[in-house]
Image (cartoon, rainbow, N blue to C red):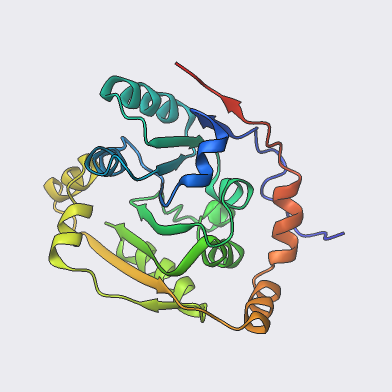
Length: 231
C-alpha cells in the first residue's frame, strides 16, 4: 500500500442534487461554479442538454440548489465535494464533451499546494472522462495560476491547444465574478485544450507517471454515499 500523503482521507460524503442516476446523461460540467451564472444560463438556453456542476463549498452548494429551484431548471445536477474525488467517483470514461474551470481559488502559498486542483493525477482523470475531441476551458484573473494550469495540461500528450472564438471568450467573462474582477482593473485570460486520442499503452504510461494508481486508492477510500436532496 502506498505511503504517500492522502489528501482525501477526511473527505466528507459527496452530496448530489437532485439524484445520482441523472449524472449518467450529463455532457457538460463546470468545476467551481461560484454563483452559478455560467452553468445556469447554459442550462436555460439548452433545455434538452444535461449539465452538472461541482462545488466544494457547502454553503454555496445549497444556495445553488435554491437558485435552481427558483428558476425551475430541471436539466442541471449539482454536486458538493472536491472535484478530484467527484470526477472519478461519479463520471464515466469518455462521458463528457466539455468541462469549464473558471476563476478557481489558486491556493498561491506553497504550504497550500496540496489543495490545488491541477495535480498530475487530476489531469489524467480529466482525460479519462472526456470524449475524443472534447474540450477543457479555463479562465482566470491570476496569470500565474492560469499559466501553471496550462503547463500541467501541456505536459499530457492527450491534450492539444485550441483557440477560442471572440464570442466564446465573451461568454466566459459575462459572470458576476468576472465583472467584479474587471471593475477592479484585473486582466482576464482564457485557455482551451482539446482531447486527442492516444494508444492504450501511452494512456497506461501516463497513468503510471501521474500517480494514478495512488489516486485510485485514495478516492476509493472516500465515503460516496450520496445525499440525494429533493424538493
